[in-house]
Length: 349
Image (cartoon, rainbow, N blue to C red; front, top):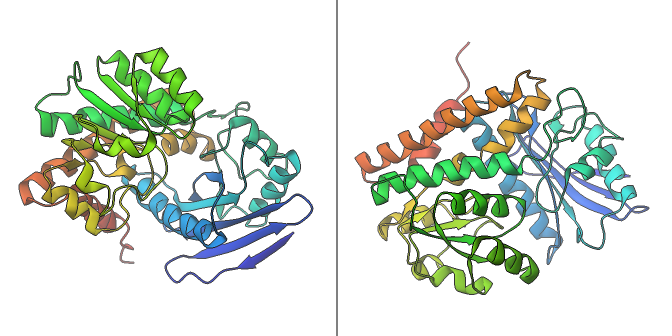
């Protein structure tokens, strides 16, 4: 196992991990431990270039700092990425090697499930380190965080709809969902139950067909999702999808979804605002998963009640952000960052 420090001025610690025997190559990025140990999932996906994986880890770990602070958790922000195709290259040896890499950080980083990973994978990683959450079994096991993440996003969609569309009632509203992985699929279930009409897409055509049949959704090609006529756009796939190219295509009133780092640049929050599209800041909307995971890391009893209370508080935070943004006539992304930056200011001795 080779663990090599990587220079990243905005981060506390970043390492490149490689284990030739198992094929493991990836990065662990610790953005901040100001509020507690850095926590954030491990993402496994194919990247065109290794530098793309590093960029993803850096952006995602910073996002976790903001997400955990917005949810008022005693956790810092971290993230890991593994450069591999989860469908063909995931092996027990690779997962165990990653567990050893996590363990080498001595608790400065706690890992959990993210894109391309499952609770069973967390269990395998857990054979090599105790600094893993999202397990299916154990005294404080929190299991798959995806349903809780989706529930929080559903709350955020309703709150944003109240601000822009005049009501939390989604009956007859059209929601375009991009990405039908664990979170996106569960979100479609919540939206369907609430009476929304769905337009869906994913790079996995078989998954699109399943969701379309299950919820009576309209399926479109991945690139077509940006231009559909809908009330709400819910990005639930990869980040940086709101940018100078895609924002002009949008025909929606609200953007509220589960993908991390949806804005390619800070200017894109301003672009949405200029177009009259209400943006629900992603790290507030999708905080449910880490809230669920936090019960395991911090060994909190009464998980369901604690999670429900935190989700309600997070929804109130979203409402406060959108209210202040409307009052100041600025992007909610700007307001959210300002609130969290204040939370993250070191307290005077």
